[in-house]
Length: 79
Image (cartoon, rainbow, N blue to C red; front, side, top):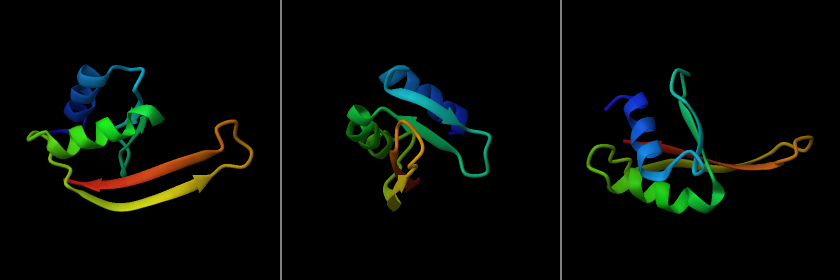
């Protein structure tokens, strides 16, 4: 499954209010998930046989002191 396919799968399942943003063309692709949806999205990525993201390689917090949304949680997942 290609990254664009994963993006569309998540948008179809959760909608753009929960899948806020995604970059599929970067060297290290990323997705922004609404905080209230993180558990459901992670479970879907793990449990869906099309994605099977079964490993969280890294989990960390980021502090952007000058930003309005100051804190961010980063999950690095492997499939």
